[in-house]
Image 1 (cartoon, rainbow, N blue to C red):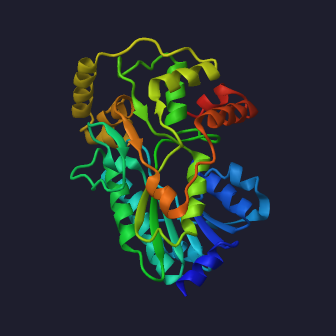
Image 2: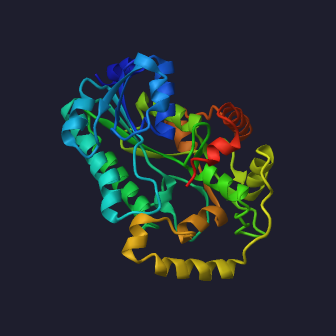
Image 3: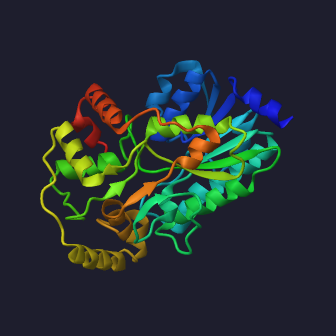
Length: 356
């Protein structure tokens, strides 16, 4: 019976996508529509539906919050596959904020998925759950969860992932995908536009002078492709997978290339690592003040600095073996695609206008 179910899932099915109004979620919507799936999305009243509305009647909208069990149960009705990409990804807020948006939302979706007899639950997690002060080179899925997490985002993502994997059963196959540094067209608030804004303002300095920082990134079309591939594989039950572009990049060389591509000034100057450490320690003490921690991003944090100073590359061998993951976009193609999209919306100024 199991094999028959997997065969049926290879054809067009009914899918629910969370986070569809956002960057990654909208690309999962595109990929599912291309596949011929019947797409339903659950979005809040406050969501920006500008892009989704261009798709006309190709998708069904459920207006509701993922923390509302009634709305979530309504959304999962008659669904075969659930793609859960929604979550709180900012670097400020209370633990309650993160727990509600990440853990409670995921719990509600799992409960509703079981009640509605959803067949597959694909969760989008993040390698950030492993963030610390050390280099990670070619990390694979054998790495255990850390004893301490870098921030509330990492902690609640890890807790959500663990609940998703534990929920795996004969009736509901669950898996988790961990894309690293998602980037690409339609991103207006992620790490890439934020770095581009810092470069444009002349504020970015090389935080790792003399070090060839190797990192993995993941183009948004690659993780969307991975989501659909995992959803039909018979080998993913209760498994987590790192998902990246086909090759790592040298971070600061890549940023220089981005600056040149978009006619931004080159990154000039650097910050002494010891001075940076002292600065971060001072800011982290200050950001223990609840009013600051809950409402504003720190100008720099240990977590953010680590993204720019530490090696962070991840093996995709397990994803390749278990569900045939194959990146569809290279870094070079991705940059070209990003330039075309940026030009189509009015140039780099239009992108930076949305960056806070």
